[in-house]
Amino acid sequence: MNEFELIEKLTRSLPTNKSVVVGAGDDCAVLDLGLPDRLLLFKTDAVVEGIHFQKDTPPEKIGHKALARCLSDIAAMAGTPTAALVTIALPKTFDPALIEKIYDGLNTLARQHDVAVVGGETTTNPEHMLISISLLGHVPRGKATLRSGAEVGDAIFVTGELGGSLAGRHLDFLPRLAEARWLAQHFSIHAMMDLSDGLAGDLRHILKASRVGAELLTTAIPISRAAKLMSRAESSAKPPLLAALTDGEDFELLFTVASKDAVPLMDAWKKEFPELPLKCIGKIIAHEGVHLRDQRGVRPFNVHGYAHFS
Image (cartoon, rainbow, N blue to C red):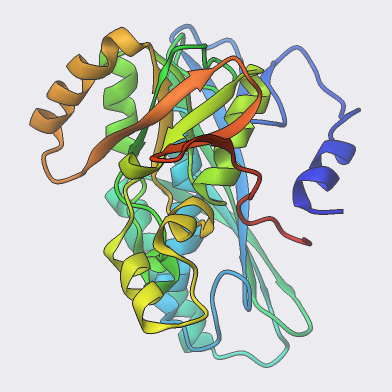
């Protein structure tokens, strides 16, 4: 049983109440606490030694990544983060100076986005370090971007470049908070999420929630320089296109809009964010699943992205 099969099994009968607008199954929970102009966003995420970082990872980058992962999920909902709780689990023998440097990295990123760190928990974990962040945010009513709104005919967009994140970007990426809010303010974004487990896997979450399929143009998928270099340097490395589709930890935005908005969006984006690439990589179709189009035609693509326990 992989991560997503376990999640599906555990979330079938979760308790809920009248405050829940969106529960398990999206990038954040969305709650209505009666505020006239906004909804609350609630997110938790964790980084684990040996999975998300290694013993020799610079500690400031560990702290940055721990918070940045949650911020990226707030971005996926076009929200604004507000306050975080930090749980850190440590082996019995640990270096206090190293832990302080982890917090330095976390606190620096928090200040950049005006996030208050308001407490948390410390505990013992026998072998490996673990840091878990719980993050609150908010989004204007009517502006939350969910996974479930993709429509047949939509254009599919992705920011930045994909693949090769293990070359270092997975530790120092920048959450696309400003970009996501700009998108929601200026265009009708039908569905959006951040890319944490790879385009091939994460796109399927949108397709499942929206009950549609997708056709991707292979020549349009933005492949990072790191993915290309890794492919050349290591005979066992993935081909660059496969790396872009499956590596994960890109933390870029994946979203869909009506095809009529595609060109105006691209033109406006270039003026607002000239340093960040934006590519239209395909379209939403009625047939379920992910399909690739290249010079050989259209074929189903059954490879998925990263999944814990698989």
